[in-house]
Length: 185
Image 1: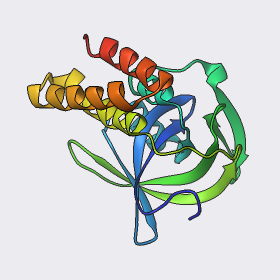
Image 2: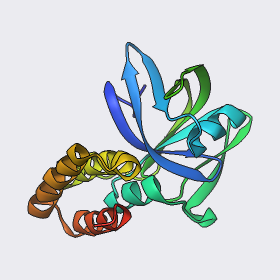
Image 3: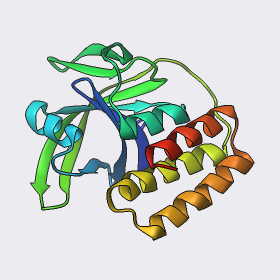
């Protein structure tokens, strides 16, 4: 694979006019996703058998797609492998996959991904920004915290909020403000 690298790649996954931050696991030349059964992403993958990984460097987009639906005009339809898939209009790059559900348990759906197409829409260099990275981590914790109000998760969110306030730029601070509203802070 070209754009998807070893380890867990944080992307915004799109399925049939739905978007959500997802980690794509890439190890031993195999790409997989682990989803929550019953989520929009899981239901759409079961129904349509595809997903697009959108590479985006917008902290607000990660937070918003974790907690709300985007408007229809935030997506672009793309013909891929005989199907019409959709990606984010603002994606810097995207990778379209055929998605095959390998197994489902009560709490997880394992999906194997087969790359069909990858496109770089815009070439941009992004220096490492600890604030941006902490938005990703805080968002992961916040999606779980909103469900169970675990004080340990709140402590992690607060830790990352401190890094975002210290290291983040204008967009990271905006994303943090949105995230805190979603969790009721």
